Length: 419
Image (tube, rainbow, N blue to C red; front, side, top):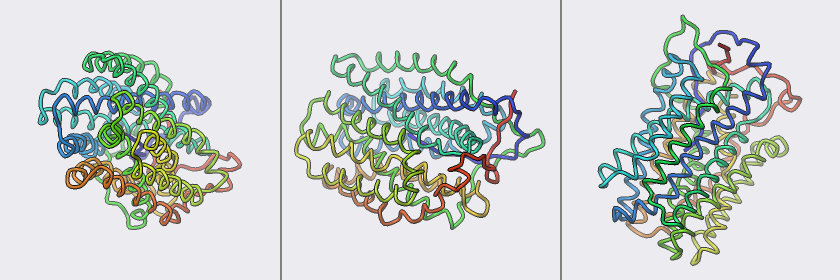
């Protein structure tokens, strides 16, 4: 799941207390990203188990897997009001805790309709937590004056990677899935409490109006949003369907099928952790084009795979290629000349529409043809990144960023205040 900065109302001037502790704030928000990723990483390793338990066809599984995206898409606009009312720190703590606990719901669903309901709620809490924690990351990046968002997303992938390792072990040991998910949910919910303690507060001014529920994207942000759309489609397809692809197309074991997500998460984590340095060195456009080439190569390998030995490296290359694209899309939107906050919201809307449609499109296409054909579409969208990279030229680091100077936050982006 992943990565939506949010816009909000004008806030009170920041208290210097939090700003004098940027390392603490950055560490806290990085750990929040890791916990958030761990929830998603735990769930995806149990998707093959859910399919087998309920006897779902690819089309039925695709329908179920689109429900988290629908819940997230509909609930994300509510997060701004949640932060406005309760403050950023409390919003992240509450929403992250609820999402951790929602992890157990899919395993308890006895039928496809109830699984869809459970996944809708799971996605709704995921989306709101995602918005709130990205608001923290965007503000800290603005205050530090240098790119950190790729590294934060890398921590999300690290959390998913570690959790997927636990999921692989549980699948290998035939551990009862409801028990595993319940224990994991409680552990992660407990970890969320101290992790959120060091977050900076985002506090709206008393006279500020509540943020609007929806923001129409300006035309200037649409092309940028389409770049993010391609990357998120490839990410969502690989996360949700890699295990099924390994099991159904290459005939792998359940343990190896779960490991396919691990390969994807590992490469995403490493690439994102190194992404900030690479972006400063290569620039946004070159980084995107190189990433598109790598992701395309990975997609071709997946499509050609007749064994796990080819498919798993293919998914790994997709992860490497798309790792930094979404952070760059939001950075480009934030540097648009007018109404930056609305542009960021617009890019988020376009980008996450991809997460809404990807699971259903992959499932429907697989039902009509095959999963191999479905990942042909993923490969084509990966190549589109090569052609559209120029749209992210606005994400090229400014000289002030390279010198480590502090930048002024774009219009409408929330500021830090301390309690």
